[in-house]
Image 1 (cartoon, rainbow, N blue to C red):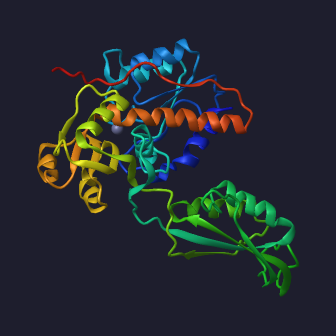
Image 2 (cartoon, rainbow, N blue to C red):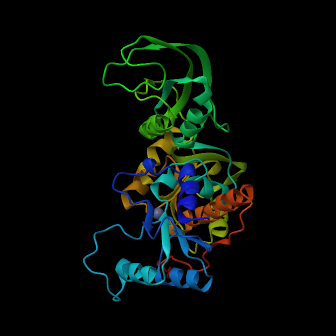
Image 3 (tube, rainbow, N blue to C red):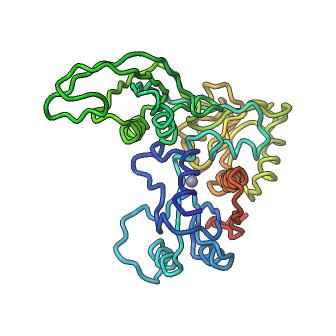
Length: 369
Ligand SMILES: [Zn+2]
């Protein structure tokens, strides 16, 4: 497998188009055509993580946080992202990042956190409207499978757990090429009729241009007829934060203890009555304070996130138990989700590639009490 294959697996799960505009995701460092010798997954890329990858003979690191975010002025040994970049290049290391695209995808950062806290009946906390379109084209019957599979490879025709979904109707197309035309069927300046199949597939709007490019490349005609129809369908695969239920109602004090144990966090900051019964819980891995009102609106008894500002605790007081469980601690579970996703994907492809979570902790925060 080459780096590009692994990037495709990651981005079919967490499409990079979902990422915030100012984010930096995808292949950050390396050569997409390099054969992968092993994969190390970490929340961040540090010098220790690079050393761990080298010692494990892994030439691909997958990180949640981007290494290259701010412009670099120099690439020297004096520390920071530039020094790590230099080290990676010296070791011919590759780096793929899945950041906010992984936060907004089903099974991503907040789902991993929710599962670590044993929440059940999980759903997105906020579901921004995800537009979808229908892409329709007209193809001679002998080419319809090729066109449909090219469109599917570009991401069309996914409905829930089903891929390659399409609908096909036979009909008759007519066309007349002018003197500059080079018709695949018939002759120029002549009205032609041709048996064609109307092929239609659903696509996510952000992905429609890629699907149309694939459609045109696979279609036999000189001028490809296609239509894009906007739909009112909702795509349930992407959203922000997660809400779920505890198996049984417990007091906040006990829930705090469980968070501490399950996320291995040394200290928690929180607001709420320790006796308050907790059953419905909202979570957002990393800094998710902007989802506080949504968590309250969704009837959550508690909201677990990180990087919570002082005033957010005031906003939450008396309305919801708000718990800051640490940025690293609330996001680290997704590292294991990435390992699991890639391992499962390798199994279906009968590939044997060593994929593991880095044992090097990348949390720079220490707790003093
Ligand atoms: Zn983060």
